[in-house]
Image (cartoon, rainbow, N blue to C red; front, side, top):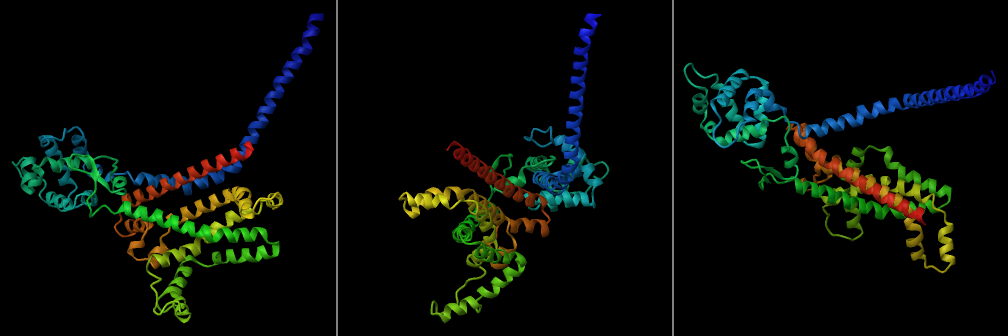
Amino acid sequence: MSKLSATMPAALASENTVSLKRQLGRAERMKKLKYGALIAPLAIFLLLTFVWPISALLKRSVDNPEVIGALPATSALLSDWNGENAPDALVFAAFAREMGEIKGTPVLAGAAKRLNMEQPGFRSLMMKTARAMPPAEGVSPRDALIEADERWADPATWRFLARNATPYTGRYLLASVDRTYDEQGQIVRAGDDQAIYVDVLKRTFGMSAIVTAFCLLLGFPLAYLMATQPPKIANTLMIFVLLPFWTSVLVRVAAWIVLLQTQGLVNQALMALGVTDHPLQLVFNSTGVYIAMVHILLPFMILPMYSVMKGISPTYMRAALSLGCPPFKSFWKIYFPQALPGVSAGALLVFILCMGYYITPALLGSPKEQMASYFVAFYTNQTINWGMAAALSAILFVATLILYMVYTRLTGQQDAASKAR
């Protein structure tokens, strides 16, 4: 009896402990579910408006459904073809049968258009061949195809068709960096008449870097002034910084066209002051594009820098000066490293926004100032070439990710260095 009474408190204590653990676990799960319920709408919103569209866009850059959708049997047979000699009779028969089935349909038009993008003249070959199908009675599919066009006797024609009869292709991504496939399927440099996108991307990154540099040179002193002035003056300056946000970008670009044109206010002022004796070409060239883009993007540089500079205590600079450190050296060694996160954030924001600019270069620039976004819009709205539009967008997206990774790495190193001190 004594042993039983001695073990009962221990058993009850163990039971209570297990029960308490279960209650705590249940409470923790309920807490997580509540947090999840609060976050779920935002997560679904981001998934539907950000992750899914970007994923679909990236898939478009390698998607190649037209040929394999129009010629499934031929595509399957060509996947096992060695590509050296002409295909066997089964390939010719499947191709002739499928061409006869899709003759006059949008499916054939889509496949022919897709093939013609890579090899001009292939659309007319496909349409001409389709009109001759199906073969006459007693005529073999091979003879009927060669009779329709002698190019079907050339293995190079079938190699080109086989290379494009796949669900995915790297053609668009290769074209966006001025590369293509040769007849043997090897990656080679595109011809001079097609090698334009590397120059476009260089121009995009170069113009973005120049605009970012000008925004930094103009924005840093203003952000420093705002951060070191009394609240009344700083708030007044902040109103002037935010004022452009109340006006549409299109309106601001139109205003710059009026100001910078040959008989505009800027040229009239320059001639009245004797700076020049004839109107300067300030619009429809790189000068006008840079002026307008710096004006539009300058607030995006100032605001991150101001938010960081506002948190820097002025006692650091006063202490350095009181210890005999020269003003510029004190600023460079004490103040600037603390302001660097704001500078990095502002530069990254301006550079990324600049890479995607379309309206300003289109209205204020010449064809030489058009950036990658212009060609994305061109392929989307005019030629309806979604593959090329998605490939160029993918290049810009990857560049943005790389910049963000560099930024996070640099800021992480700065945080680690500050903690080490």
